[in-house]
Image (tube, rainbow, N blue to C red):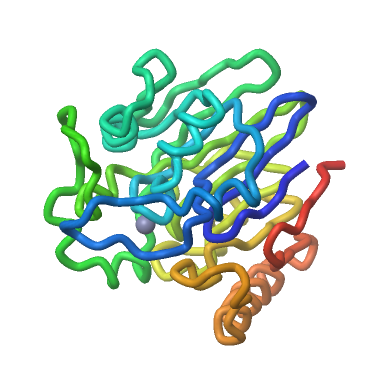
Length: 263
Ligand SMILES: [Zn+2]
C-alpha cells in the first residue's frame, strides 16, 4: 500500500516492512547559514515506523527529515553520497547507511530495488540559485547541518519490485531518457511537470499502468493550509498531458495522505 506524505514523500507498506521515500513533513524552508531543525511533532503526527528510507536527491524538501526519522525508528538509509554524508553528520550510525550512485540492484528481505540515474527538474531548480555552487557534499561533514548543505547531490529514481509488482519513484521532475528504457512500472510516482524531458517518449518507453502525481503541493506551508488551487490546477494540467498521450494510463492527483493499494 502506498500513502502520499506531501512533496515527493511516500510511505510504502509491504507486509510488515515500512519503506519511506523522500519523507518531508516539516514543510518549511531551510535558511542557508542556520542549523536545520526538523519539526519533530509534525513528523510524528504522520510517521510511526520506517525500516528503510530512500532519498531521491538531497534538497531539504526531500531529506531534511531523514536524520530525525532514521534515529527515531532505527531505519536504514539509502541515498547519494551527499545524503549519506549529511545523515552521518546528523548522528545516524554508519552501518545503517547505503551510498548509491546509480545502476545498483539492491536486494532486501522482502523487496528489491534498482537505482536509476536521473537529473533535477528545471523549474524547481530555478528557485535555488546560489545553492547549486556546491552540488555535492563529497566528504564527511561536521555537525550541525546547515541549510546550505542540502545541495542536489545527484538525482536517482528508485524502481521497487515487490514480488511481481513494480513501483517507480521519481524525486524531481526530470529523466535521463535513455535510462528509463525497459522499466515497466505498474505504478509510477511522478513529480508534476515535464519541462526538462519529452513526456511522450518517456511514457512510450516505460508504459506505466498508473501514474500518481506528487511534488505539486506548496512544500513550505503546513498541511493544515491545504493545497493551493493553482498548484492543483498545475497538477491537473500534467494529468491531462499524460492522458492525451495515452488514454489507457490511469492518472491520479492525490490529496494529502491518500492511499493507493497495488492490485
Ligand atoms: Zn530538488
